[in-house]
Image (cartoon, rainbow, N blue to C red; front, side, top):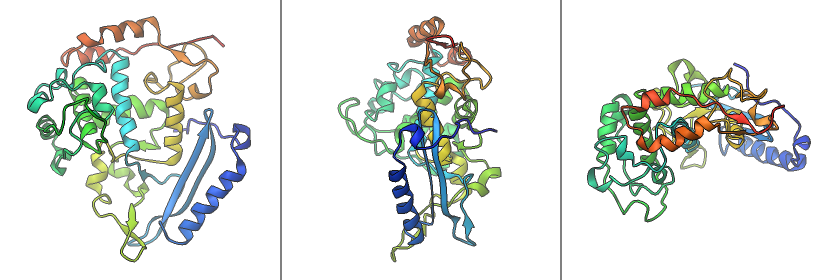
Length: 330
């Protein structure tokens, strides 16, 4: 699979080459001092990749393995954006509306006073259950995941404050995606968001065992200040799980491309890698298209109908793909 962003020099993209050089010197020194085993950096602007560098090691034991540009790193909370993008895609298709309550699509979620929590409150850390936890058993039992999420207790009134939901909100978003699409949330994110953008080799929510050798081990400072391996994250079950709020894996260049496409408006509409955008754009070339996409009239109609969508009708609605039209034909 071809990486979708073309390369350019920092100067051509209006970046300060000297500043980037200082950044690289800093990271290189940190790796040499063993503050962390390795690092991967990517910087993109205006739909082009200005820098992609990998330094140090991906693993230290049982033997040192050098990191490469294809090494996959734990994305931590960057995963939240991939999960949220899948929800945006469903909203764009008319399967749900951001003003819908979560309970409208996930029966049972209304327990413990959660019935009025809207999807937008969920995604903007206003749901009111930031400390809720899920057990590792849900990684392989999504019915248990649904039950666990529905039993989350409130800590305060939804919408009354913004407080970072480390994992709970996006576990709920995963349950929402599964309720609407009748598919594993990891499969939906991969097939409807990641692969259509040409990033199937660079981003994963749920890392298959066949890609495990590409994954870097994650470390933190140990008692002696040297990198110590984080046991809770460096095993196959965690990587396969694809925790929707912090367990994705990817390359730095992959996330750089994803964010560039997000800026260009490509991510919620690029459901077919061969589809055109009403001009000469494709999902891959959209970030560099001079004419940004705007929703078609049909897409707008679907969004207006979104509040009436139900969990039963969603799979049918979600299959409809709007055809965006560029503001000008080139």
